[in-house]
Length: 120
Image 1: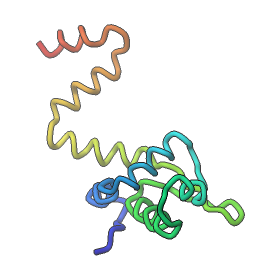
Image 2: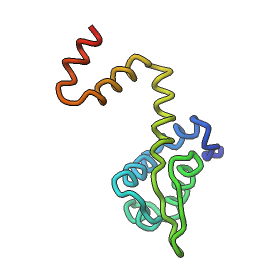
Image 3: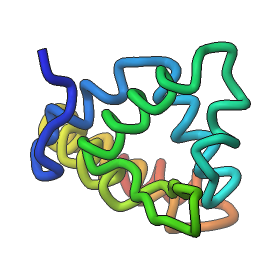
């Protein structure tokens, strides 16, 4: 079974997210910005070729971007891809929760009272 997919295929995103190592790579990229493949591999107790395979799955799903810097390959998180895919799924499964979360994120201090009022 080929785990890479077209970046427009949301199923590929969820296949990529199914593995805890790949989820940790995404978290590391979010916290660390751009990381070299060797830096990423050094954070895990598995072989560098295994990490390369995981990075390939993430790239195939459109969740990471890569660029060359001399002899290094640098990886970065494609945040919009992840947010769009997960958001599309959540809006289909529980649309009222998306509205509630969006309202909470946008209202700032005292938001919970306003959200309760809006949903009463």
